[in-house]
Image (cartoon, rainbow, N blue to C red; front, side, top):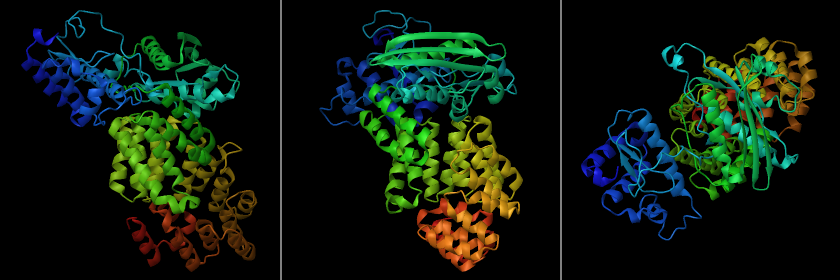
Length: 595
């Protein structure tokens, strides 16, 4: 209702109740935004509620900023609308006064729960459908929390669902990133919902361009439902088809066809989600996130993610510029900051970037902190910050960030894997690391990276036969399959076989180690000379030769790469013979590793 139909005192009391709630108390900017629009309206200054004014007064933009070039006000308003919706669904569901910010403007509306919403002018109107402009494929109003029965019986397992890669019908591979990105973000957002267990990207994309039956998908991924579809993009036109299939009987429980403008991509994702919600009788869950961003920023973000997903380390390097372009288009787009932080994490840990390490680490932390500032519920933002803290040896803060990431999104396999690889293994908490990696495997059973991480951890734990089993699950063309299996065979004492396997490996440090273990010392010394610029590979060869002094010299030269690389290396069985040496204790202290 309008202020004249409700006392200002009642509205202000409700305002204080809202901003004191969990969703607002730790978000100063959102609380300032809400206070500003409410107080302006109560004071009769509704004419001031324009983007140009809000940008300056609430968001700190310089006077004269152009809202057409800077979407920060629109983005923050979208987040405010979503957060208000969440508040009244949960903490405020019994409140006797509702504050709303209708879409398309910045003038708040005040009403009683049983009242029909009004426009700012006081005229009654029907309540609009929620969220036709959301962002990114975080972008969907994701699937609902759980079946009612599940809310009562929490031991019931969640519904398993796989989102298969949407087919690109344009026959132009340049558009693959767009259809892949839509698929990826649908998976990502479904993972935020209690009662649903979506399979991760790697496992779902294992079925791309591969003949399969849905029964096969259901068996391999242990899912109850499969979402599949196609995308046709022609200029600014989109045609998207999608259907949700029940695996046990190949029954299509929902389908949708959408012919829209490219600018409607977010509303299409919203409708797909609502179709699935209704068909599975789910309700919207507490983990919903909404973004508003420009089509240009979203497109750049999808291109960056495509590089990361398809090309490994070179892809991370190429993705940085695209993420930064996306941020330039929309400085309030949290997922882009999380993405670039992750890219910095990978590129800062290599010898070629050693002279830029401090600069890259600084950028990584700044980007991760910005992602969380913009969206405190963004799991990948917290995981990126966990990596940043680990790189600086701030272990308590790192663990807190990783655990928060997992709490926000238990199905995100990357959070479990990064927690294991950047902290738990580094601190020699091997069994805990293996538990996290098992959780990652459950969420992403066909991920080659997770299989490799498990082999890596099991090798550090001395469980070589189990490690070999995971190495053998890796695809034949996986970049470190031979290295993985060769190390496991060395641990099993099958030296000759290990030498034969490692002879094909690009990382010749492991070959030098194996040659030394086989008694071929001269050949091992030759390898050490060939790889002289790389101290880690040299350390491996010297360890195979049982040369403690030269092994420690090489490990000390690795100190410039920081505690994560040193800590993981020291868990390797290859370096077990130097662990008790005083120089190792000094090295650990130097890089910030606990005793």
